[in-house]
Image 1 (cartoon, one colour):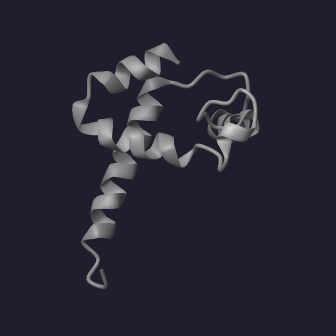
Image 2: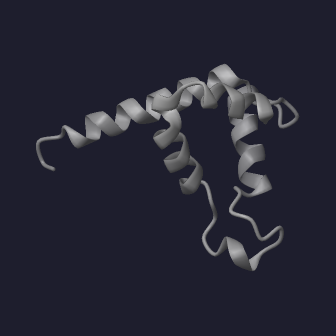
Image 3: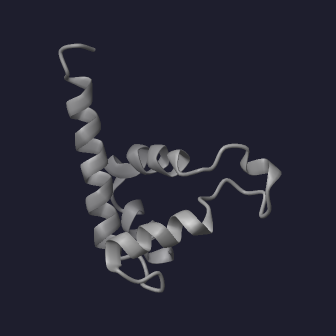
Length: 85
């Protein structure tokens, strides 16, 4: 996880997207369940690892996370440019 954080840290343009996406992963009422931290559920993370890499034991690859954040940023830009907004 430190490698992923380090990879994002050297790309300041991705910081707002990383914060936004991280917050979207936080479960509702996270303060009511242990570990009482705003972190995604273990089941969700395992699902994402399984769908990305085919193995829940596979570690996140920083390059994949950066690509995902760039995709999210670009998608949001396109969404803001929609004429019906």
